[in-house]
Image (cartoon, rainbow, N blue to C red; front, side, top):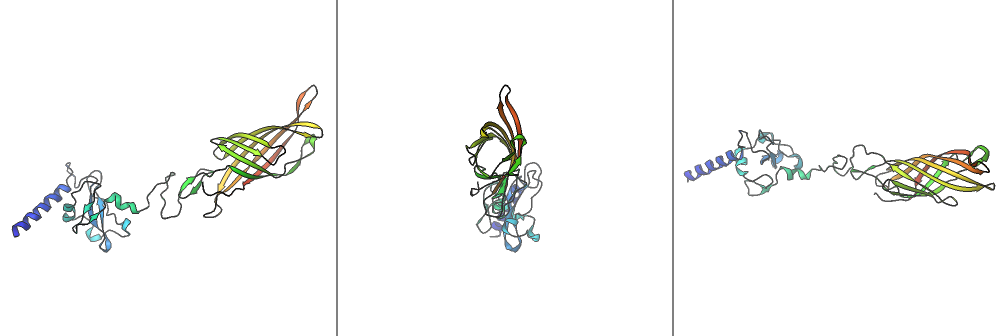
Length: 282
């Protein structure tokens, strides 16, 4: 009976020695996981580093505990039981399985978002998002700006050269984006005016040419819009608030006999707008 016990101890010592040899004089097998103890009687794992020069700390944080100060170093018995390849379950003395280090950390929220942020719990967490993107559900996302906008001009009326007072009343516009191409239709105008152009991040550059009849004169308007889009979250769980601000410049010309089309006035308006459609998060 005593001889059998001696052989068992010797076998366990040989397995432990094999588990801690990396063939290059190290103290453990690179990236191998072994059992270790946590405070409160819990068990976890610790991993040998890539050089095989030593073990990292016991992964107790995922269990809500701290390493056991009295059992920080892996025991010979623990290493003897660890004969599995990296990634396999490690058998305990009681016959149960303990997941390796990589899986033990899976309970901790370490999923990186596209902007490199690591959220914790359920609270969104982002580094600075590039405008007009917002931090939504833990990642930088850009809302859709397509839809109906209410746009106003400041001032709504002004004196413009020989034309006297001209007005830009509050109007409704429809925005459509396809990649970097943008179409903005002033459906509140009679007849509607279509602005086309491009978008670079939050910046819009649009233009339109149209005619109007005023005082029996056919006037041509060459208009350009330079605007910036912005998005914000007014309250947690609410749809994004989408806003537009910028300027509308109009060069107004008319046909003059013998001279062709001659510019007669220029008007510049400050624009602001809010998208009125309530949409869920993009």
